[in-house]
Length: 159
View 1 (tube, rainbow, N blue to C red):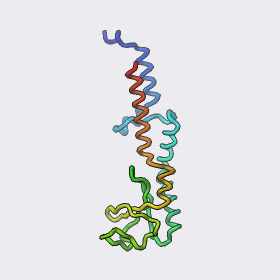
View 2: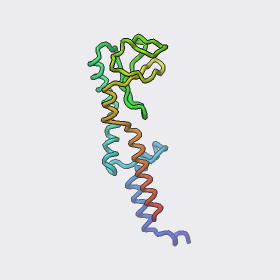
View 3: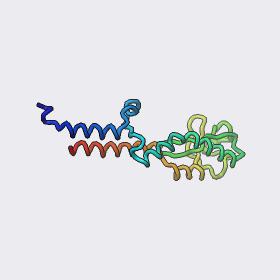
View 4: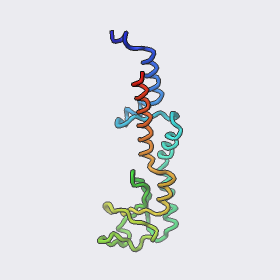
């Protein structure tokens, strides 16, 4: 009796639409959100591609920042969601006043953000540029995928 109440062609169409939007295999692996198929949303695809190469981009920017600031021994460029891009240095390699969290040997254009364990994190113009050009990719990807899934849910409920 339930099967007679269902419109099989409509259900098939919904199933096909869901399968064309949601990457079921990857979604099953990540388990905490729905992953959208590559090719469904151009801007989302671009963000995912940028995110996939983010480590290489951060390494290259780190080399450029280090080349500009020879007084630094080493550094890393990192990305923290909702904080953005930061320069990370090993605070043990630089003079550090723990009372004021000041680093007299760090370049003047480095703005202190926070210390965690042996690392000190800073913003500078290069990090601000990355924030502007790349932004919070992780949040953008998750928000866009959630919006696409929400739209799909609305379509399902309208059937």
